[in-house]
Image 1 (cartoon, rainbow, N blue to C red):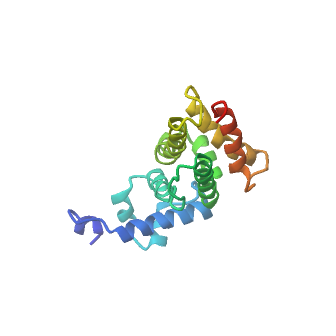
Image 2 (cartoon, rainbow, N blue to C red):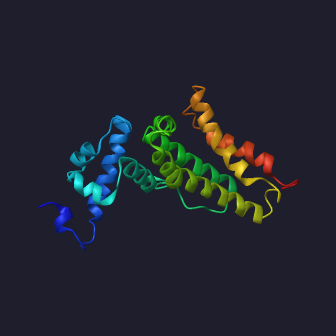
Image 3 (cartoon, rainbow, N blue to C red):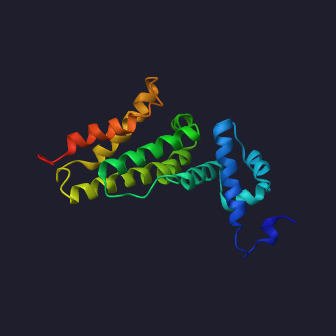
Length: 196
């Protein structure tokens, strides 16, 4: 019958996992979170809906897992060059958001917070906080090398790095290729130790 009855104790198929996550991302980009359904994902991935439910409990769980799997997929590993590493992380962040119409998803998460709080909570846990942690790690390494002030507030610096992306989008200036370099240069100027 279904895979749920046959698959007890059997390892999950990595190919099916990948197909489901890929279908979820494609539908998220084309339909948006509210209009996409698990039935559409199942059809696009050529699996049963029960196969999806064996892996992810809710649509929010699936979508945020798909975003988590995609996060930083194309970004190079850190190099030790603070400016280049921060720009690479921010550039990958922007590409990810644009690929899945992420600003609309963020709007949905905020609008649905009272009714579907797990959507925003999972988005934070799986995408927002790990991305912030990557940026913070680069800044901590720079501080250890003496490049930025010891007392610098690194959480505020991370917000300063990410903030221009959202502000530009809201002001109708989104998509500027130079935004990441400008955000990094402005932030590092405020963090640098004298003479560094």
